[in-house]
Length: 385
Image (cartoon, rainbow, N blue to C red; front, side, top):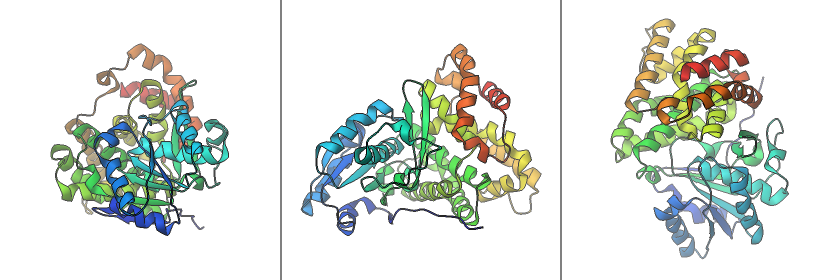
């Protein structure tokens, strides 16, 4: 059996990679970019830095900076109008997963029209939108190298998973120096998000030899450095390893898909506005513990790749160490429970059956080594509280 691997045409990795934007645009024969970002990236000077490089090379970009955390149907519409208002020949996305996810949706809708719901899974979007160059500023989502985007429908509170080659950036400039200013909370949430990507890609029913190689290497890079960057954001060596690990984890789950953690995470984010990486972090220990029985050897491999178990440890011992580590990691990185986050208990419990159905509908739980029923998902939500 063969596996199709889809990657950006260009992946530039390392300190200063973002400064190669002009040469990358020229190689793609793009001359008039629209930058899609958020106001934080503007205030930090990252957008001005990219525009300065473009101006030095005879180009200049217009800017749309109204993307929001956890992008919604409404939030991307003004971006679509902006993209259609000029003769832009490409999009540069600067920011974390939300600006990049927004840019993916805008690139498709600007060219083909329609509503975001027209493009949600199970439809596979293979049409090419405006060429997208992604410059990530967080080490977590891996969106710069994935064929997925997630947009929330405000009316139904559904996080719509959209899949296909059409959402894959044509280029990714992975510059760890852009992560040095990240606060500890975002560093933790995005870092655990990346670790979740790697673990879920490795245990996914769609895992393959290629995705396995990327996932294991991602775990080796991320796990030993998460605590370091949380406590000392200026640690450049750890930041660089986390950034590369995040991108490799993105490659892995783009090739193998994610599983139950992500399936259960999206409804929490949509209904209660919990950042995606944080809701993944909340779920990772309990969902892993639920799933262990169905592929103990694979989870043991994860523990060994993370450096918390040795090759001489049995699968049973390695799995015990894995669960212990995931719980300790959440504790040290101050990951809150839903209650500590401030979610209303009655609202959370009332919505659990709906969230369980939305999780199953997304398709991600079907990739899990242990495929849950709706009732089992409800019980996992209850335990999470």
